[in-house]
Structure formats: C-alpha cells, structure tokens
Length: 80
Image (tube, rainbow, N blue to C red; front, side):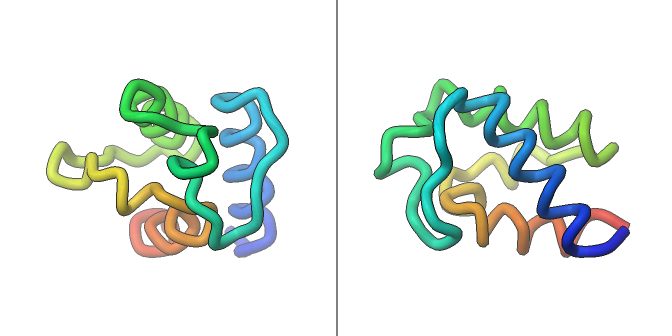
C-alpha cells in the first residue's frame, strides 16, 4: 500500500471519529481537544478495522496516537 493511500485512509478514519476539521500533522490531537481518553478506544478500533491490524494493549498509549504524524508512523510499522 502506498503511503499516500495509507495517509488518505488514516485521515478518513480520523474525520469519522472526530467529526471535526483536523489540525496539522504534528499538532496534538489531544491538546487540540479532538481526542480524549474516551475517544482513544474508538480511534484504535476504527484503525484496526480500516487497516486489518490488532493494536496490543501495551500500545494503547495516547502518546502513540497523539498526532497524525505519530499515527502514520505507527501504521508504517504495523501495516504491510
């Protein structure tokens, strides 16, 4: 899968989960108020469904999913 396609799918998932315009790639999704600890499981579930991955419990850390860039890096490591 190309990085552009992965990124488009990631942005689509984030838009569905947040229902709001997205910040810049490096801006914190938590500090901007788009995500909180209650929305993190929804985001992870949506990412698992979209990318056919399983996010282990040890990875359920807001830092790993804090920005578009961090989520993209995570996906690059875990999606074939």
